[in-house]
Amino acid sequence: MTWFRARRSAEEGSSALELVIVVPVILLIFGAIALGGRIAVADLAVDSAAAEAARTASIARTQGEADSSAARAARATLANQDLDCVEGPTVAVDTSQFANAVGTPATVSATVTCRVNLSGLALPGIPGTRVITKTATSPLDTYRER
Image (cartoon, rainbow, N blue to C red; front, side, top):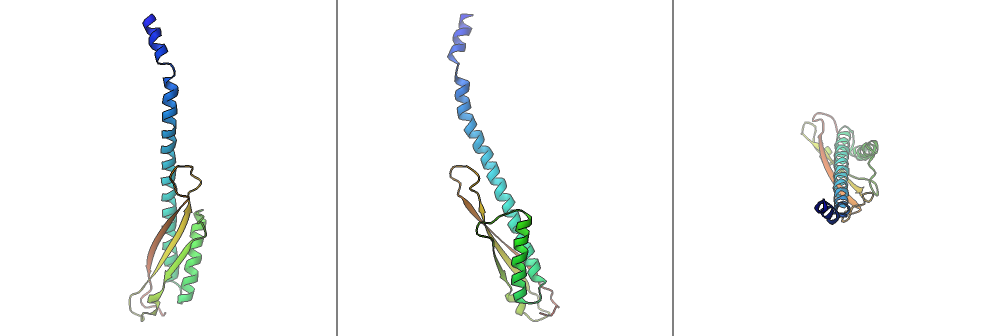
């Protein structure tokens, strides 16, 4: 019986030490999962915004209308998905193929860039923002007057 008491007293406090070591590791793992999730959701939202901007630009009648409607569509898509870009999203639309002759295949591409805020995650070594850029292309109607 004395051996049991001696062993028990030698191990007292070890569970507190284990807890001090394990809890920060578990918190870092949960933080990394949250970071990965936030980046994945933002990546999908920016990709969707680029696709919507390209599609909207491809059905416009003029180059000027394509630029403005694509920017509006990208901003609306990001707003619908509750993604707030730091300093707003940047939308660049390539409408150079609008000048192609009717009957010639042509495309419109849209590039959306969003700086995602990551400062809400209290993880060491994580930057405050991350830039996500996506490009999508949509065909113009080959026989539509441009």
